[in-house]
Image (cartoon, rainbow, N blue to C red):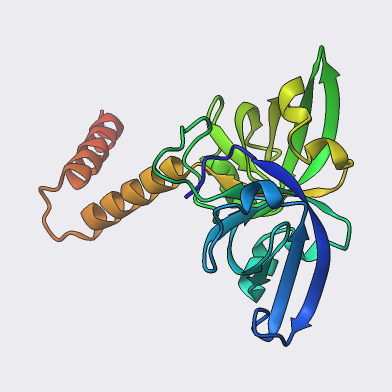
Length: 237
């Protein structure tokens, strides 16, 4: 679990497509440097979010660490586009004494979004994003939380028809995350607010159960039957 408050910006030292070392696990691995500030309490097996993606530490020293990346993670995130020298947002998993300055972030990326516009607003920047996978727009709400490349931000506008949304990034945050290093048409990792997904799942299950229930006295069926009766009554007049 994470808070979406980026602790430091790391640098990709190596992106290996087939790492046959013990720490590589015969798969894709990332070696991240400039991370000394978050490695003083690191252990093998710890979780560190890279651009918002929860990954497991398989090797570390005083200033760098390695993680493995599954094919599923590569499909869902922008991590496959990283090259040597790329900058990445880093955050350790929360401990018991961490203040929740952001919001509850799982580190499970839902999809990616493209930066389609940015404009200055005083000392802030307003970014506009378009989702790759349209269905996730349903979980993005005005003034709700969203995690972009591991950064907890507030949604300031949503266009459900265009499948786009906007955030505003203040000057302080600009200096602490990688967003300002990106260009128009670049992609960012998106994790929508978990609360929205849980509510949507609960409502879907509730409606499905009531509709599939053979009991005609279920609240939803009674409501539908009342609507039908009203329509039929109006047609017969």
